[in-house]
Length: 301
Image 1 (tube, rainbow, N blue to C red):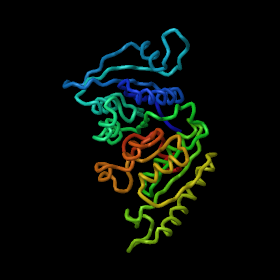
Image 2: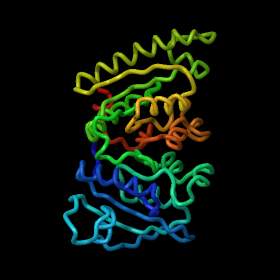
Image 3: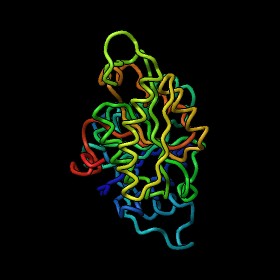
Image 4: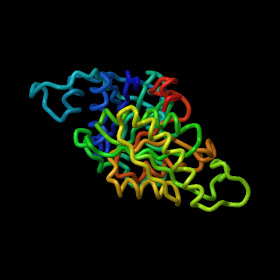
């Protein structure tokens, strides 16, 4: 099972952040987790935390006026953090308060310009010590995701076990089925498929990929999860986004980087390209740092 005690929701008051807060609240209520809501004031000073009225936070989060009606029972903390950069403030807070999960919008008031130049969300996904859920402006509300598809792109690195373990546990939170996707990229280290020498026939790689995914899908099905398989060739990021559109994916769970490791993370990972353009929330699972599932659960994925 997922172990989530503290969720961090950074907000700048933008429309995208408002979409993210619905998912942050849903997850906090589901896991009975403390929800830390912060805004970052970008200024040249040491890290500073200023307490804000909790009652105001609770009303603002749910779009109701104080006294209008009951609010979910999740524990809240709202704070303003002073830091030279927005991403730095978020990351420092996550470390200082031992956050388990960050839920945030993909971009804020600076919109497309910040997205193109390297968004706060992308820096947080790269450097956060815990998993990150990114939510775009057009994302579906959590209460409308039941019966939808959780798309899980997997390569054949060791990181896939951690990704699948998280996907297996997050699917029931929203009542979703799984689609396991593998994109055959012939130019990308074909030896990972157990084939050496000259580039092999893509059909051979697809057959090998399907056999591996069949085994992993059966393991998930024994746990009562509906699983669909999809193996295709092409560029990973483009194919992931195409499949997400085709199947109307409600959620994507993806590793922050695959076989090329740190090099890919620094040069522009598949995960970053996906979170920029995904039509749905993206759950970025770190291949390092904090995991929300037990080690035994990862090995069993």
